[in-house]
Length: 201
Image (tube, rainbow, N blue to C red; front, side, top):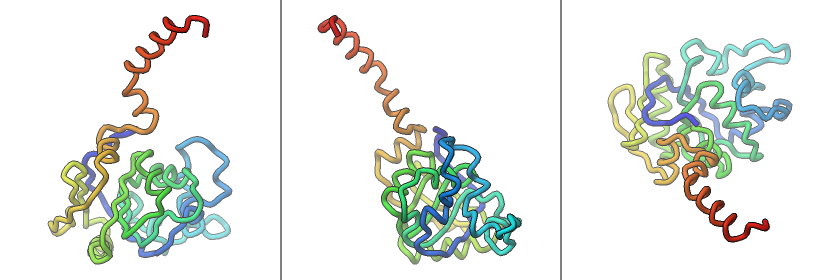
């Protein structure tokens, strides 16, 4: 998994509450088990019309936000079903950080397992970042995971809280498999000892 340390990029404003996982990636795109290729279908029903043409009013279709790496959005983001395809689509599009007042629990945890940093902040701070994001591509926000700070385009520093273990995993680029591989030497030693003690197995 790609490490997350420091990110400076354009933030896209999506002032919507209760964005569920079916809005993030509709069910018809869940047939794949690959983590790549889903970015084109992120927010599919809002990004495209029935003929497949782009909706010019949707934020990620606007020129200044096509390369957004940060998403500033509303309360209860990622609610609905537990599909892991939702963070896969977000990451494949290029978004590495989501800032909202709150997240659905399963989506929140899935983000960390896929190299995405979800940051929960009080509503007034999200509102300030939303206004900053609305300035477009000239307004770049910096997210420093090690320092646990967000710096707005005007230099305002906003601290955020994060679980220490989740922070460690993002900084080191460790998903569930990576965490297991960290214990490789101990696992090998256990298996060697088990074979010696129970050779009949």
